Length: 323
Ligand SMILES: NC(=O)c1ccc[n+]([C@@H]2O[C@H](COP(=O)([O-])OP(=O)(O)OC[C@H]3O[C@@H](n4cnc5c(N)ncnc54)[C@H](OP(=O)(O)O)[C@@H]3O)[C@@H](O)[C@H]2O)c1
Image (cartoon, rainbow, N blue to C red; front, side):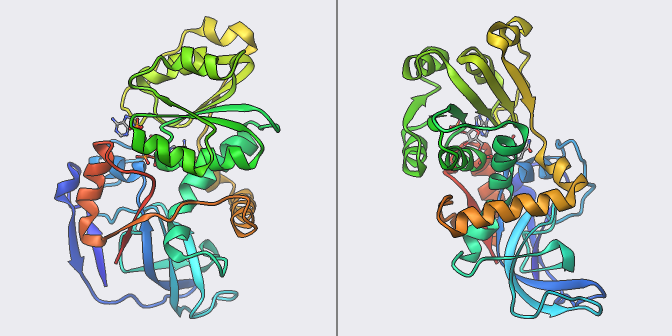
């Protein structure tokens, strides 16, 4: 088998690919031949050693994958050789094989390709958790999505649209805004060139109902100010780097709410609830209510350059590494 290894915290360029013996199934576990490992912003933070959970090197990055079961260990029931499965494993997905606890794999619906399955878990579960568990969205609500051309951003547009909302997408380039429109945004804001608050209020007279913010930095305060009466700011991440400080009077005004979203920690502490949430997402994909875009596929050896592109804001949508 081959796997990407982070030998020391630092730049993506330091990642290497090593060759090792194939894995064997141990009791209670299954071995999966990985078809695709999803790339997420958190992987760049793990490699840099700047994530809130610091994993000492050496380790294999990659928090989600999909593939085919090739071996099952003693005591495994309900999973068989040949099954197509996905997993949200936290680390280790950027490899040609992974060993997984049998209860941690989920069947991939027949009509969903493995690359798309690998890429949707983290982004779509985060967006679904945010918009159905941490707040709710009613038919006709107005939702502003920042970082709209990224993984979480595109998923949030798809989920908000699926729930009946009207979505404004905000992103840095015409290409990313075109991707956002293609997945269902009704209007766009080029937030590096236009006044985010003024434009959002112009598009949605009276202010928006919900802001989805995976970007942070200088965009968060104008987004908060764009909220109307009872509006909710969903704090998801800080991809731009700086963690914003917000004026409390802007929360008081209009009875707004700032909502923290920590899907990963919630999923780890509430395994049964996460299983239900993932089932809801996959059911919505299966019956066509959600339509995740097929990810760009790059070879395992490109792990470093893909992460560099992510940090340079050059990625559009999701990327998977295919061993
Ligand atoms: N809280 C949770 O449960 C949870 C779950 C998943 C992810 N997250 C967080 O959500 C954020 C987005 O994750 P993602 O996987 O969607 O990332 P992504 O696909 O790389 O998208 C991030 C977007 O942020 C924007 N951005 C602005 N400044 C940036 C910079 N300096 N470097 C990189 N991107 C920049 C980019 O859009 P523009 O170029 O258009 O500005 C980019 O498309 C991350 O902070 C991640 O850790 C949180």
